[in-house]
Image 1 (cartoon, rainbow, N blue to C red):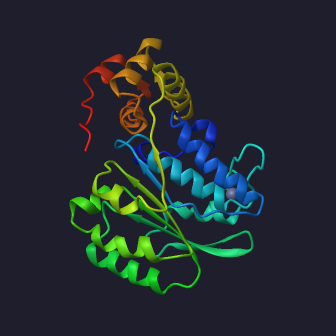
Image 2 (cartoon, rainbow, N blue to C red):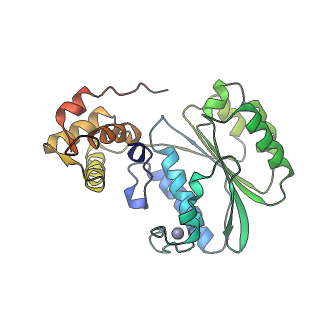
Length: 259
Ligand SMILES: [Zn+2]
């Protein structure tokens, strides 16, 4: 059930925790709707599976949705061309999307899987590109570990006409690199109560039954209110017949140590 593990919220109400991140990206969307798109460079740090990537992906979808609800900032139900094309799925070539009557190229780079050669090619291409770009570097700490981060220094310093969005599990070296001209935000865990409500909504969405109410609270606790970790358990519950989240499953699940 990779669908559940890769779940992305369809609205801001489906985001759990992370109030500062939500406010930041909503502010950019509101300004954008007023015709003032501000490409604020943003560095989001926080533990793995704490919801960084899914929030950025929701933001990108909202930014490019042609039928975005101006009040609630909710994207359409995959009715417009951009939502249907699913900007988030595009790989290394990125995608040209119209935004406020101009083309803004969106280039997501998954730093876990990008090869050194691909990254080099993208950065050369970036240097020569004339238009405006949004570059999303997901899990950028992986580049540090692979000694590939040095390549980013010049482009991130020199290039105008680019909005950089960078997520990372650790700061350290990256913090030095991105400290100038970057808004820095951190993920923030939801309370056990709020996280339990969110889990109940997800079980409803995925049509998973719950054996007893305390199971949800226990999952909130054991997952340390980490959406990515909890979704792994829900993906296991979803392959049971009938689909059911049980106390036994929650207690026996081996949660990954943070990497
Ligand atoms: Zn749309």
